[in-house]
Image 1 (cartoon, rainbow, N blue to C red):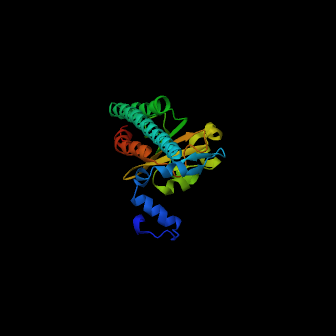
Image 2: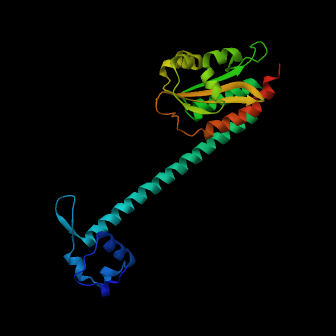
Image 3: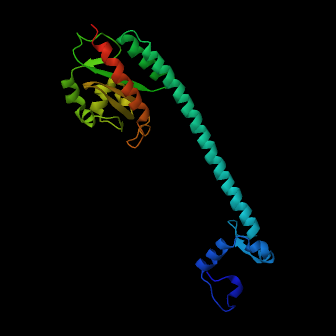
Length: 232
């Protein structure tokens, strides 16, 4: 771009050229301080403020925005630390389980008291006579496919809303209070169960919501539950 010292006085510069010039010469107003007093910018209140005042205002707004962002990052970090601690306690409780009942009780207690999950359903596929009685519900895979086949076809963790019939199958009498759900299939070679959690807020578990935590819990259960299911 042509240097300002050789620009003809009659030359009309475009806004883009002026903008580019000032970007290349950020010290221009330092070398020409008298111009600052002549510059006025419209203010939201309807009056006018100097360029320096406007710059101070912009910097103050940017500073506030950065502080808000930093505060949000710190809040997220604290939330992640709490989530890690809760997850660690759950993992230790699952590892200490002596049988299927201990494992299911540890999972449900953690979800209820630690993670404050509103509704939890743990389905196990099989014959009730061959699987130890616990707080988990035992149904045949055929029944599960007939009642929640659409969910099972996903074969992965998912979030969103379910139909009333699907919610009734999973959460029973609580179905009407469940606004949104998150589910993860339990698979060890073949599907052997399903873990579903629900929230009263219809927007809490959204289809776009990350399922990293639930998938992680599912992976742990995939490795721990089968060894207890075979004991009878």
